[in-house]
Length: 155
Image 1 (tube, rainbow, N blue to C red):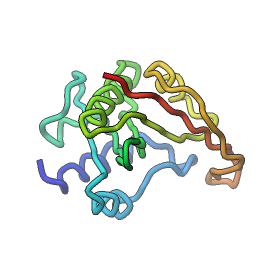
Image 2 (image 1 turned 60 degrees about the vertical axis):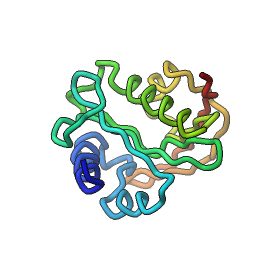
Image 3 (image 1 turned 180 degrees about the vertical axis):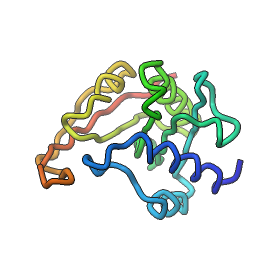
């Protein structure tokens, strides 16, 4: 699978997974530019919960970036019709394993305060470690706090 195939799959899932109201989705240029850094990584998951081998099989993805010994989850998405099947949690676990293999000892993510995905992150071992007040803005201008979560990566 080429990098362009991966980006195509990410964009296909992202366009279905993120409600434009929350303004969380990245555009293709942002995704593509992030891969200019060799420390940016992506994993695709299929409907059976396995790492997708073909871009057309992807129903979810995670993008992350390694900085020193810290892996930051940049984007995590599961297509709406595949939610509720533990695919998000499984994808995070795949990402955590890959991050450990790259030398990461911690994993972080940031999300808007009212994001229902918080339950998935907590189930995957993340705990709240910080907050940025009024960091996000919705399509109609509402301000939302950003919540930072962290997780230790152990072998």
